[in-house]
Image (cartoon, rainbow, N blue to C red; front, side, top):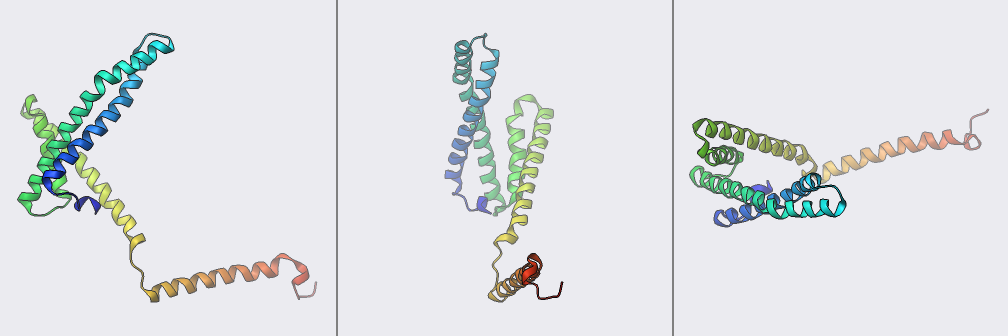
Amino acid sequence: MEEYTREPCPVRIIEDCGGAFAMGTLGGAFVNAIKGFRNAPSGLPRRLAGSFAAVRTRSALLGGNFAIWGATFSVMDCTMVYVRKKEDPWNSIISGAATGGILAARGGVTAMLSSALIGGVLLALIEGVGIAVSRFSADNYRPVSLVERHKIFMQQQQQQHSQIVPRFYGESPEFNSSPA
């Protein structure tokens, strides 16, 4: 639920845009470093120079593309919060679909619809996994009453006692009082 206690919308848009730019730039630097290294002529100095040149020329471009996606998604998410008057996973799903459609608008109606479908499905999967993980881990953070805590403690003590007593008498025959 940490996602729904975020900054207000004008700040959220700038924050998401900057975070997306940073992720895109770092990811682009990593991918382009490998790509530049592999595509450079043989020899370690040439390969390192090719790697550095590819990072320098391409990583900021990918970061900018991520920033545009992040800003568009945040604008759509804030719009959905304003229109629906609540913050829930449906806002993210609808925003992902709208972002995919908006960013593919230059490709025509077919490209818009397919990108909107892909964006909506991807965000639905992400939100679904987030909900499943939060429900799975919610039991770990459930408050336990004192009575329940005492019951659990007594059960653990009984289990430990039932494991220690047979082991004590079963390990060494000299302490066993039964005739041999």
